[in-house]
Length: 224
Image 1 (spheres, helix red, strand yellow):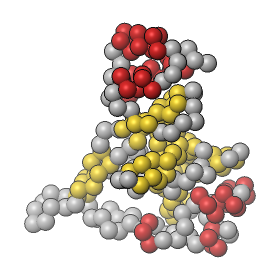
Image 2 (cartoon, rainbow, N blue to C red; image 1 turned 90 degrees about the vertical axis):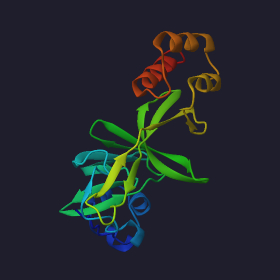
Image 3 (tube, rainbow, N blue to C red; image 1 turned 135 degrees about the vertical axis):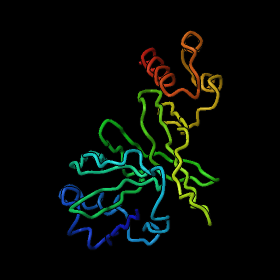
Image 4 (tube, helix red, strand yellow; image 1 turned 30 degrees about the vertical axis):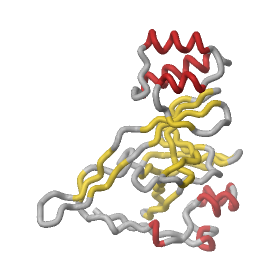
């Protein structure tokens, strides 16, 4: 299947589409809704493919938080491959790109936040899944790769989901990729003896999502 999106210009956006956004804050709307640009149009991918570029194929009622504003829920889903959130309104699709004006986006039980992310020597905003927050915050970067159709064969194009990459922040410091547990512990200034003992007892792995969440919850509980 091929998705085609109608991208609205700033002038049109002031009058139609997300009335709930417009009622709240035109300034926020003008900045966080996608600007008109051909680079956001789909159609370059094959019409038939395997896998999925989405965190969840279904549209789920979601909420966007920006500043002190909470925008009313509309059906949405996260396109991991494009790193954009798709909104559905009256049969038309709209896009929301990661922007530092966004505090968080709630889609069902999942929360996405925007962080500055370094990729290929460039720093740019990206959506990360918020796993645990507090003095120490844990997030996950979702990744999907696209493999083109193999010519002169029946092998279709395919979206392939990669393992999540975990990141953490201590207070308001820079985002750090979770490498080894040893380096993670060394970067934290408080309660070294307690957290080292906890990691050893619980056999926490830097690749284990549930284990990392458990560790961050414990760390925050003893550092309130």
